Length: 277
Image (cartoon, rainbow, N blue to C red; front, side, top):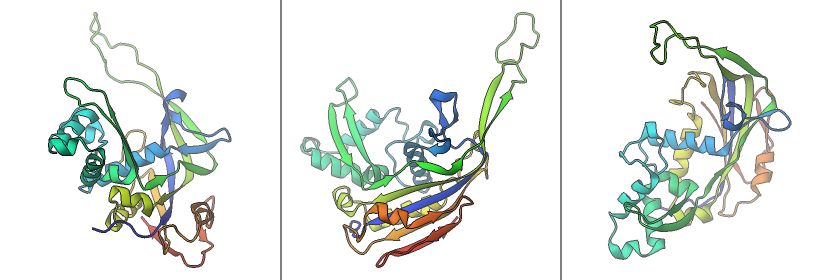
């Protein structure tokens, strides 16, 4: 399949209601915030959700979560070495060949890129190789400062047996959530980098489709089903590889209100598509 020919910019607008969209481990797992009090969901978190959705829909993914492990490999180095074993010895010696084969196999590698840096060991070949991917996405920020609610939680059963057989004292903990907020993030796809990884128009369509359904199958105690919802994905196609406008100018043409409403100041020559979940 031919690689992506035209530059793409996009915006993702979603709501959070009584959920913790991205806890901060340095802040007691409270929802991430900026110094101005805006809610934040990191780009790493968003890419993790995109990977999970792509994997659910049948794509091969290199950076898998433990609970989504499909191949039984216990580490990235083990997964990469198993992949290397499928190549000839001559192919293994050429980094460009290894990179091309890795991009061909794993959707997330040819989308986001990947750093392969593994030390030589009993089960690991010495590898140092970086791949730049065409898909970039920013952290998402709320349109207004968020209100964080914190509640105490207790356990109702013994975690460990007690010497006298009685119920141990309840363990106190805290659970944090955003009461209600609208978040926005922006991204771009570069045809120049797509040429290097083999990222195609079909791959771009796959990314677009998973953005629309990003939070399906993402439920957890911190994010109950229905507490996070994609409102809109704005997909903007240029008519050339380099694009008629900078990504910043395209992103600024998409205005998102505090209630999640979208108004677009269309730029000449661009194709805007607004998708709802």
